[in-house]
Length: 68
Image: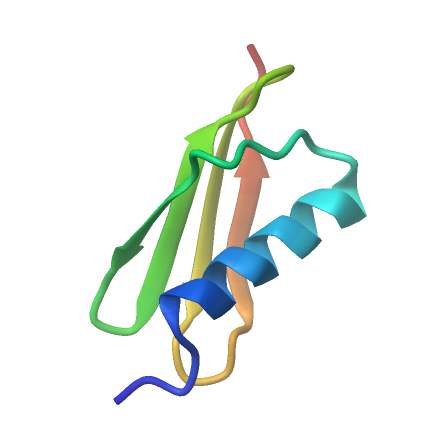
């Protein structure tokens, strides 16, 4: 059982976007991997969000916003 939920991963991703001043889209997708969640989605103004968040502690392993 993971220590963080999909909802937690989504909240962590949203907070990281705010920290970087990246656009946030509520239609972001969270997928379940073996050790991490992948959060991805299209920004309204800007590029596409891609983030990996470790399940056991919520650490952000990778975060990027691709340019449009």
